[in-house]
Image (cartoon, rainbow, N blue to C red; front, side, top):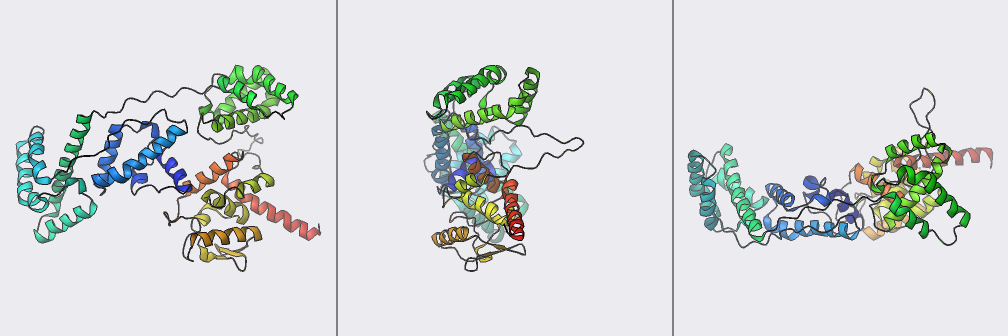
Length: 442
């Protein structure tokens, strides 16, 4: 299931509205299928302590979360959008909200704490906040009150935390009351039904193009019936991973089908792509047959070489996409992920067709130079601007985001088995081959 940060990254790469401030930092690890009302309210409270007002949460953060949930439903990865409270509360003037809150708070605290809080409210909070609507309580408002308390009233810094606790406790009290009155507790999410190989494989066979030779279709069917379905038929396609293939390899050795492992992995990848295309599952990296290891050596065999024709399809797929730009810089210039992240337009001399990166002068191919010129012109970027950035996100992205975008793009073109490093190293392999051919006069 998609995490909130993954869904937000995909939305940002497609030019949609950027994620609201603080959301990814606090909730990036949340899985979309686990966002219920209690989880949402906990997030709202954490954001409020970071300076996000209730009004801003309702108008900006909540709609963005709902958009991601609706996208997950549309893709088939989530059954339905949970029933969430819309946080549309009546005005909460501080002066009028204090008495009901104090009455409730008195049942949960000691007499000494109650007396101390009553004194703070009377001497400081009511004087300053008066009829202020607590729905607008945010970071700047709290900073202004802190200056008032410390500089104008000469308050003790060590006691200011009690003032914060009172303000947010009152706000949380009325939000919780509104949620309870509207009965917005989210129903439990139904358990996701397994996507079994035996259920999907027949539909995949039927979907093969009419141009597929009958002999090949019969071969696929025979491998499914003799090997794949008996061993993997009851396996959930969403849970396929390298360990599952290793277990399957062991089963093939016992049944005498070891020579067909690569054929079977190819069949499974075709079925996975079919299931993703039909919206039955999220996109996942392509499976690979376990690599053989040399005796007394823990290192695998050399990495795969990206096929040039497929890579050309990748880099020419979407001129405006960040993912295409990232793969181009790795495959056509051989840049590391950090070099891509921090690359500035001032490092690219498009007139001289040269890139100046980490003390290296790298020739820029004519086609790539034209692509970068158009991209810079469309972005109206300055020399100090980062190449891999957007108007909504002008700062460098983190490494995990760079790797994720590249991997998802490669997967869409059937190259998910390639790592980012293999794509980058292919640049140097091609440069070495070109140099050898030049020396030999080929």
